[in-house]
Image 1: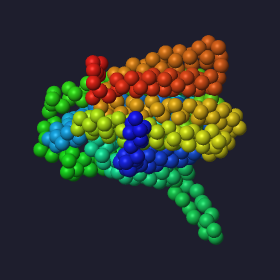
Image 2 (image 1 turned 60 degrees about the vertical axis):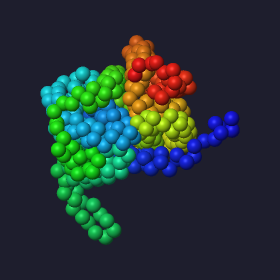
Image 3 (image 1 turned 90 degrees about the horizontal axis):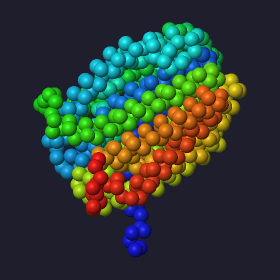
Image 4 (image 1 turned 30 degrees about the vertical axis):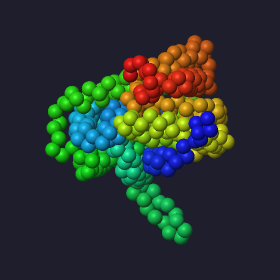
Length: 464
C-alpha cells in the first residue's frame, strides 16, 4: 500500500525538460502580445478594439490547423516510443503535405472573406474598414503560419521543444522591432543629453499587421529549414503522395480534435460577437483581459505539451506503469503552478490592466473579470493536462464531446441569455465562461478517475 502512495519524483526532470522550452516560447509570444497591445493601445481605444475584434477568428483558424498537427503528434510520439524510425520519417513527409493543403486552403479562405469578417463580428461601423485591412494583411503569409504550427508540433513529438522555442523567440523579436518602426510616425527621443531621431512609417494599426506578417513568414521558413535538416524527421527521399497507412491513424485522431477546436473556436467567435455588441468599453476590456489572462495560462499549456509527448512515448513503448506515474506527477505539478499563477493574477489584475489602457472604466471592468477567472485556474489546469495526455495517446473523442457541451450548452447559451435577453454586461459573459471551465474540470476528473482515458488499462472496450 505504501508503494502506491509514493510519488514518482524521478519523473520531474524529464517533465520539466520538455515543458520549460514550450513555456518560455509561450511567454515570449505573450510578451510580444502584451507589447503589441500596449503599442496599439497608445493609439486609442478605437485602435485596440479594431485589432481585438477579430482575435477570436484568428483563434478559429489557428486552432483548426493545430488540430491537424495533433494527429501527427500522436502518431510520431508513439512511433518514436516504439523505435519505429521509418514510421517517424514517413509521418514527417505527410506533415509537409498537410502544411501545403492547410496553408493554401486557409490563404484563399481568409483573404476572400476579409472584407466581411468585421461585419459578421458586429464590429462598430467606424472601425470595420481598418479591421478588415488588418485581418487581410495578417493572413497573407498563411502558408508560413501553417508550417510554424504543424512543423513545430512534429518537432515536439520527438522531444525537441527547444527548436520551436528558439524560432518563436526570433519571430517575436522581429515583430517587436518592426512594430517600433512601422506603427509610429518619425519622432525625436531624448536619451540623457542626446536627441535621437527615430524613423517611422506611421502606419498605425496596419503597421502592426505588416510587422506580424513579416515575422510569421520568417518563422515558417526557418522551421521548415530545421525540419528538412533534422536527423530523425527530415522528409528527404520520402514521397509527398498521400499515404493511407500514415494519414488514416493521424486523421482518426485529428478529425475529432479538429471538430472540437473548430466548434469551440466558432463558439469563441459567437461569444466575442456578443461581447462586441456591448460597446467599445466592453470590447476593449475583454480584449485586454484576454491578453493579460493568456500569460497566466502559460504553465498549463507548457505542461500539456510535455504530457502529450510523454504519454504518447509511453503508449508506444506499452509502458502502463510509466503512464500511471506520469499522470500522477504531472497533475500535481500542474495544479501547484496554476495556484501560483492564479494567485498572482488575482492580486495584480488592476496593475496588468493599466499596462494597456488609461481608461478607468476599461481598467475597472477588466480587473473584475480577471479576478473572477483567476479563482478557477487550478481547476481548469486539471482538464488541460488530462486532455493533453489523451491527445498524445490518440484518444480525442471524449475531449471533443466534453468541449462541445461546455462551449455551446453552457457558455454560448448562458451568454446569449445574459447579454442579449437580460441586457447584462461583460461580467455575466465571463461568469458563463468560468462555468464552462468548471464543467470541463468535473467531466475530465471523473473520466480520469475511471481509468478509461488510458488505452492500456485492462477490460477497455471504449472506442477512441
